[in-house]
Image (cartoon, rainbow, N blue to C red; front, top):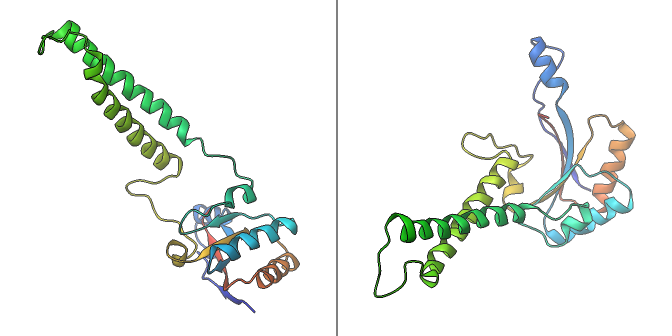
Length: 200
C-alpha cells in the first residue's frame, strides 16, 4: 500500500486581504505519485489512459523514450526556431563577408578573387551553428518561463533527482474521485503518494 502524505498548503483562503484571497482562490490542489523507475511510469501512464483518467502532468529527471505519444503530446517545434536562427546566422555571415571583401575593403589574398566563396564556408558554418544554438536556448527559456530570477516550481525535490511523477489536478474533484486516484496509484506500483497545494 502506498504512503499518502498531505503537504502543508500555502494558506487559508478565508483569511488575509482581498488580493491574498484571490491568489488562494486560484491555487490548485495536486495529487501526485512518485515511481522509482521509468518502466513503472510508462505502465502507469498506460493504465491511466485505459481508465480514462486526465493526467495533469508527468515529471521525470531525464527524457523518457515513448512518453510523449502516451501523453498525446505533439512533436516539439523548437527545431523550427533552430532553422530560422541558423538561416539568419548563415545569411549574416556570408553576407557580411561578401560586403566586406567586395565593397568595403577589397583585398587580394594570394591571388584569390575578391569574392572567394570557398574561403567563406567555414565562418559561415560556424555562425550558422552559433546563431541556431543561442537562438534555440533563448526560445526554450522564454517558452518555459526560465531564466535569471525565475522561481523554481516543483512538486517534490526527488523529481529532479531519481523519481518519476504522475500528477493529477484534484482541485474540483470529489472524495470518491480522489479515492479512485489513490486506488489507481496503489494498483500501478507507486512508491509514495503526496497531496500538495500549489500556485496556479
